[in-house]
Image 1: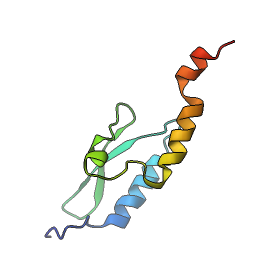
Image 2 (image 1 turned 135 degrees about the vertical axis):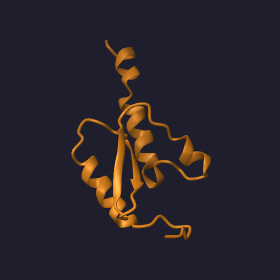
Image 3 (image 1 turned 90 degrees about the vertical axis):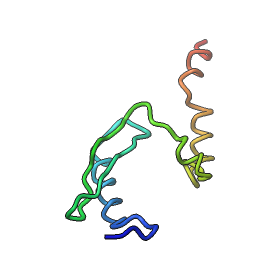
Length: 89
């Protein structure tokens, strides 16, 4: 199988990612590492729930959150944990 500048079996990768992520609760950002095996099946290697980075996407010139960027920024402005420390009346 040669690489044609496309991720092979991408729809299967998306399906596996959704299946795994739908079983993990109480996290807002996770990264999933997959490998395509010799039988052309996507295999999860690990699930990262902590210390994720957005640098890879941003260094590639792609907004990490895409069309959701403004929504996430507004949410963080209103709900960041530090706000609750300073607004304790």
